[in-house]
View 1: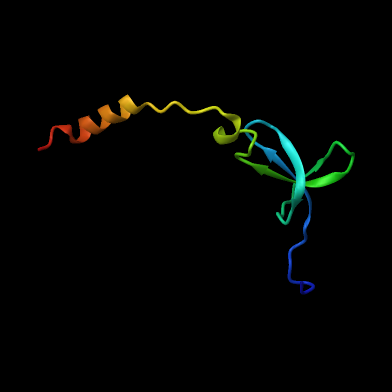
View 2 (view 1 turned 135 degrees about the vertical axis):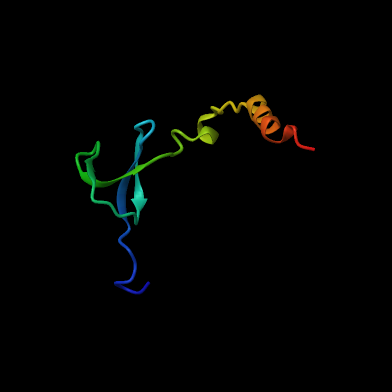
Length: 82
């Protein structure tokens, strides 16, 4: 790798805004926020909207979609037209 052209790859804490779960990993993400981790060291903090802690695929929870309501809404809009 050429020196001076790559971003710094360092430990970063990612925190899920929905559940509050946080995990330490390595990343090139930049941020001004920091957090003191369980080991007593301070790391950059990146807050994410969704992670494996809150994503339905990973948690097994599913959103209930009101398909009947969507069908009725469609029929109200376009059902009377020929």
